[in-house]
Amino acid sequence: MINLLVLPLLIPLLTAALLIFLAKSLKAQRILSVISAIGTLTASIILLLTVKKNGIQTVNVGSWDAPFGITLVSDTLSALLVTTSSLITLCVILYSIRSIGTARERFYYYPVVQFLLVGVNGAFTTGDIFNLFVFFEVMLMSSYVLIVIGGTRIQLRESIKYILVNVISSALFVIAVAMLYSVVGSLNMADISQRIAEIGHLPILTVIAVLFLIVFGLKGAIFPLYFWLPGSYYAPPVPILALFGSLLTKVGVYSILRSYSLFFYHDQAFTHELLGILAIITIIVGCIGAIAYWDVKKIVIYNIIIAVGVLVFGISVATEETYKGTVFYTIHDMIVKAALFLLIGVMIKITGTSDLRKMGGLMKKYPLLGWTFLVASFALAGIPPLSGFVGKLLIVRGGLAEGEYVGSLVVLLSSLVVLYSVIKIFMNGFWRAPKDYPGEENQPVMSLWVPGAILVLASAFYGVGAELMYPIISQATDALVHPAIYIDAVLKE
Amino acid sequence: MKTNDVILQTTSKVVFFIIILFAIHLFFAGHYHPGGGFVGGLMTSGAIVLLLLAFDIKTVAKGFPIDYKILIGVGLLFAIGTAAGSLIFNVPFFTHVFGDVYLPLFGETSLHTAMLFDLGVYLVVIGVTMTIIQTIGESE
Image 1 (cartoon, one colour):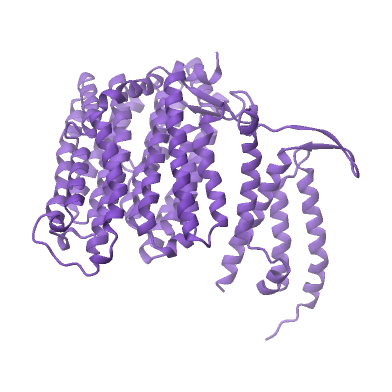
Image 2: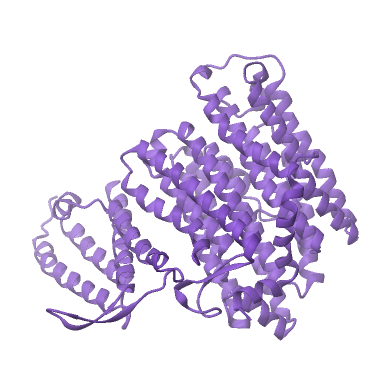
């Protein structure tokens, strides 16, 4: 089946179209959404196994040969990310069924989540820079709907900011693609890489690289372009926040990783140095936010920014080891962030507030929730043998080997801050004297806990089974370190 | 004050059909000549908007008892279905076929599966534009 890699895009797209007809029947919407998410996950796992066995898969859409048509490329990295996104979306849909509320469900919540998955999976899969823009737009359109759905006051205020930032960055994206096209005369990513290698290093390419960094940095929330993120992500309800926090920023990071390893690796003294400095400041800013707030949502949101900084630092060092670390850490962070968001979502549901000072004593009544949260916190901070450890170890070791002492030290110290910030949630939320919360009996705590627990379990397996994952991760890294592998697979030379 | 818009209403009834016919012409002109589903759809919704201006939402809704959001779904299914047909024949996604077919009334006609995809685009464009315009209009 040569179209295998299209399935993780096609299944959610088809489901989204079908769900539009089922707007009246919430039950049918829920069932179809879950079935389709399971289908997408299955398809992407099969894809991952196929890519692992047979190497990079490509489809020339519409039978127009590369580099003239649009090529969809699934290497191990993108198959891994597609699988992770599909898993997270499945868990978020399961969580939404009992928590998002019928008003939002009636206003096309489920179709839009499916469209978001199309955009995210598409951005991970495409091998064409303009097509990447298109999938970014698909993803952004859906996120516009998700951020405003429900129409509460704070959502309306933040959505204006969010849309404004993203419209500007989309315009910059088109400008950057046009500039790149005017220099190299191609849109196919493999072909661009080859042509840049042929013409050698031109100063204009460095300008374009920085322009792309601004575009992807706005999506991925690196310093100083993260300013919109804490406010905007705070507005929507928890399941949507989990989707945004674990998927959208990672699409930005993936795009930086792909473009900086495939095209812009000729002037590393400037581009990667800049990336490194920004990464370090991003981590520090994230740390300050994570310590400063007493609001559980805000604390985890600032942890997103720390993670983005760590990943971008891994990309900036650009050795095989840090690439491995970055890939490993990206997958880990997507899973564990989604898990954390879903778990604090349960806490907010029980207590009816996101203010940590008003919580307390949840351990007594909800021990399972407490322990799951603790495991997730340890995984986030990178305590061995959980999944955060291996990625950070590889990034820090690679950084030290390259003499990036400041960055490596900041990454190490940031782990302490991360640990402190999530343990603060644990100690204040789960310990202390139990309180009575009005209406807590009516909350479906167990069924809300399950999706989060699935993700924590996945994260634990990912960490303990790092040995099993290692060959897949290093296969994913090969195409980053040696662009020739990617180019040969696409252009079939 | 009650405005008298009898001239507008009478002319738009006639102009509406001219615009619709031209939109259909544009739609079929697509592929080999300038035109296609997108511009055809825009023009069709332009015609409906003209009716909305001349009459009001209720009258137009009586004339076109369609839920435009459903129209988006139908259009998407057409577009996705055409693209996904390639899965059955195991050729790369989105591969189209075309050929000359003899049809009873039309004679030798050039048919292209891209037309089906374009029909999907046409429906989605009408659905989206009309949904947007109606939503804005209703709030007044």
